[in-house]
Image 1 (cartoon, rainbow, N blue to C red):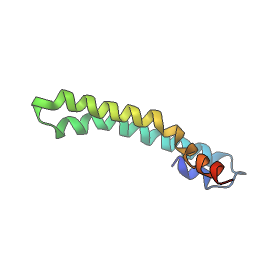
Image 2 (cartoon, one colour):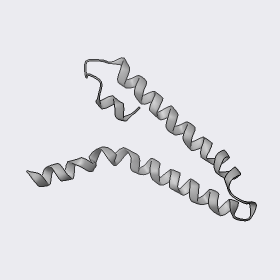
Image 3 (tube, rainbow, N blue to C red):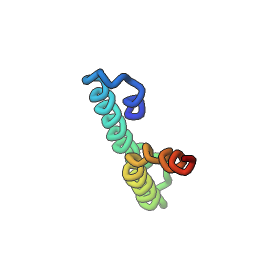
Length: 80
């Protein structure tokens, strides 16, 4: 949803905000669900280690996600 904000026209004021709120809700929901879902996947012996790895991956993903928009800029500036 957050990536769809760039597709809609810029004259719309409400739609980008709604898409951003919906995207943020989805990210927050997914982050909360990972604890419940992954705790059921792993055996008891490695559950705490696996939960730590899942939590770390989720945190790294949330830290890196705002910078995805800048990935294409380096390639464009090199071609000029």
